[in-house]
Image (cartoon, rainbow, N blue to C red; front, side, top):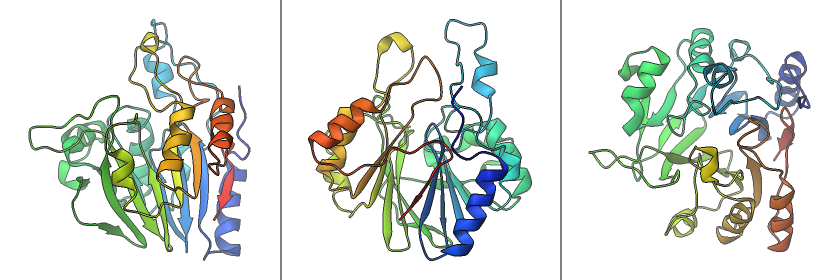
Length: 280
């Protein structure tokens, strides 16, 4: 099993040390799958965390076992300093009750940002009232939590799905903080108009899945490595960070293909290790 670069006490010590040494610098840790921790000025954002073995337990002894490839980087109850958490859609590796329930227990006033289409589902999974959550919808005004400003963009996983109110069930997020702009696509494939929509922002960092799509896996897919590199280039991203690999044996790829594609289109990138830190 892959061991995170920093894990448990070492990861938490690194968060404390980086924040204390350079609070005015934006710090990013990859927590595995599509989960990231973002820190600036002692404010902490958690994006799509999956910090449990809930899927491995759920699918044990089935035709689709979710065999974990990377050790758990940190238990959610140890993250008692989070200021805001987000979920891009309702799949468990992006909306995990065994992560979010203990996270809320240790951060009782924690804002949880979800698509407005998913509020009822998310509330049931997290065992909270629906009005406990912070809904976001595409093309609405900014949602501010401390220094973080959020806007939603549609995500196609693998189709663009809307509810009866026209709200998208899968979203990506634009996060503005410290004069920088982060795009976290959630689970997504290319669709008409995506690059044009994203070009309205000057995106410094794009966090994009690269595990591709294969009907044999039996789950909706994502960008291939080539597509992630090409999207980064098309939107003028300062840096692309690949994600959504090395978590489950049945649904992963090597990042080598993404790296080759990024070099081919001259798109700057950073392949992170789980538990590793990027300073911007």
